[in-house]
Image 1 (cartoon, rainbow, N blue to C red):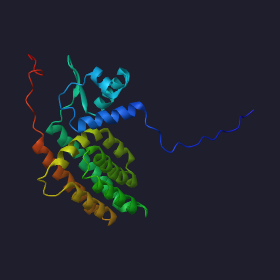
Image 2 (cartoon, one colour):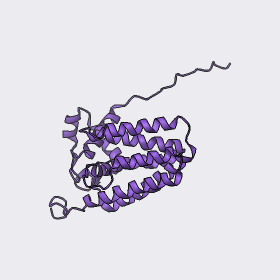
Image 3 (spheres, helix red, strand yellow):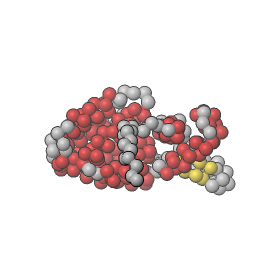
Image 4 (cartoon, rainbow, N blue to C red):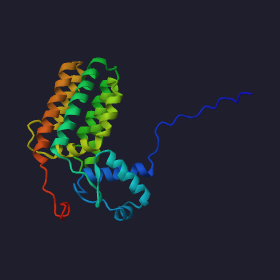
Length: 236
């Protein structure tokens, strides 16, 4: 005898778990510079500050290690990962290829409702430019690019970008703070927006490449490999 088919109500948006919230807090703290590169992440103070168990903190540290924001040092434990120029250069190269391809594809195959969505996303980025916390701006910027990747049908490429998102956000926080850029990040994003909505794939790709080149040049000025501290040297 067949049992009647049960229809389950679709979950529109899964609620954040405690682990998700802790991951967001820790990620934002690292990106904001609350924890400096090379600083140890000690479990007990983190548990006390966040009001969570050691298990949750350990899971969070493992997750952030996978994102490249934390590294485990023998005899020291987890520390905030340093971001070198060589790593940044590789990240910018990946972004240039994946974002350029997505922007070009999006320019060719966007649906009618997409223009309004992309414009609203760009407006949100501009509205968060003056925020005192980086998290809102970085989230709005991520949403802008996610729209482009999804409309282009480049979901696998977006998964790759998401794995790098923690380090991408650290680089964005560096370059956004720079006051001596010839062209602001907002101007670059506006150029990408305009090129995509004009349905010009070549112009869209070039707008992305100009943005990445400018950001990379700015980041290179900040990322000098620091000399190791006494605590980090073999005899320290």
